[in-house]
Structure formats: C-alpha cells, structure tokens
Figure (cartoon, one colour):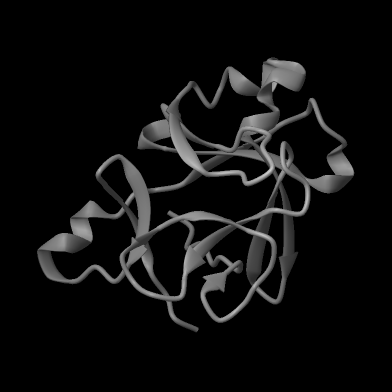
Length: 137
C-alpha cells in the first residue's frame, strides 16, 4: 500500500508523502452522516479545516472535485441541495471508497503519482487510486 497524506496546495486537496517539518501540513478529514439519503448507502459529507470546507462535485457529464466553503454540520439538513457534497461510502479489507451522490459511478480518487490533487474517476486503473485508508485521530 502506498500511503499518502492529504494536504492543501493552491486551494486543492492533494495526496502526497509528507516528511519532517512538512508533516504538519497534513489535513484532518472530518465526515458526518447525511440522513437526507438512503442510510443503506452510508452517505457522508467530507470536510477539512474543522469542517468549514467540504469536498463537492456538482452534477456534470465530466464531473470535477473542488473544495467549497460550507459548514459540515449544516449540510446534512439541506436535503437534496446537499447532493454535491455527499458521497456514498463502502468499506472492504480496511479500505474506504467514496462514490459521488451527484455523479453516480464516479469515485473520489488520488493519482498514482504523489503530490497530485484529489479528483473523481470512473474506476481504478494505472493512474487512479480509489481506495482510502484513514488513521483515527
């Protein structure tokens, strides 16, 4: 497993190897359940910076991932308007996957290369990694 840390660079969440003093750049990821969607799909909203910035993917033929200023505690009460911020999570063998609620079939991913922004992909391949491991804080 190629374990990377998440950090901010140019207002994008990036996955890369942080060492020494740079380890302090690591972002903690917060998630809250979103009860506006079927609970069997394990819907969550993902945020950083104490939940003041959330990952979002607006519905589109070629969706993109971005950070938006939003309160992670308020979004679960926004109903369907929270769809761009919602990801259906699945868990297998200690790893998580996150499918976009606004863009079914598109998953949160990192690049196989270090220090690249998080994005969305239709599936794992030589350039996209869909599986995430989180260390509890």
